[in-house]
Image 1: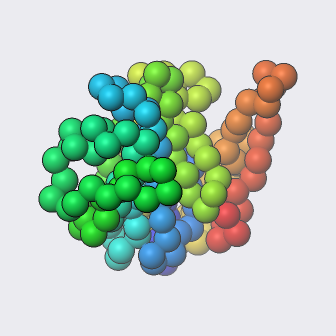
Image 2 (image 1 turned 90 degrees about the vertical axis):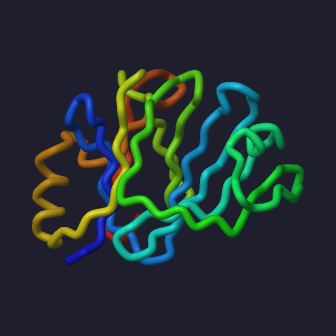
Length: 167
């Protein structure tokens, strides 16, 4: 059995991303804070069958104070950061909005959550255990590109493969 990171458009019941993910790997959610502006990065790590929020970083200190985390806010490299968090979740739901610019980052690759007509949709992010055979069949039958879809500057759809284990 493989541990799989699944990102699903819950409203459209469509998989956006499925990739094998290892213990300790980071999954980052980046967005623009709706009240204080500036970008925020929530860094979650894979621990067992859960995603654990370990760190939150922001361009504006007020964005971190808004969440009232137990940790101390420190300034590092021009950003504000709270570390040492330990909030574990089995799944995470995020509303995809262009205004918030919500983006999921895994291994340096970015998935725009409101992209491809998903504005306002509810996105589910979770870990699951799947056999490699199940994962491959689902990947091949669910998405015609079998991949992450992005728009290039010319406006056409470009398919970029995220291979099993190589992503």
